[in-house]
Length: 82
Image (cartoon, rainbow, N blue to C red; front, side, top):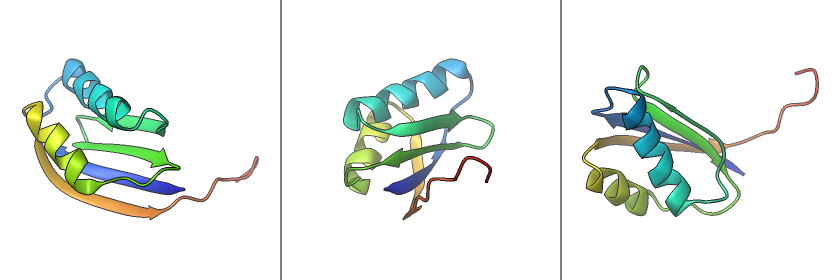
């Protein structure tokens, strides 16, 4: 599993967060732990399937937001107490 973090500019309100959430869910319906934050200008999620940066970039740009950066790192599920 990979944790994907995407920096996005142009989100101003809760509806903007919802639009980005919808875009990611449409492309990666099995995405887990999806969090979109206009305050941090980012979206983060965990995926079992490969994530194509270019597809994500184009889909976000089509909604009118600016795709700034993409980061991927291995995701380690935390235990019950840690």
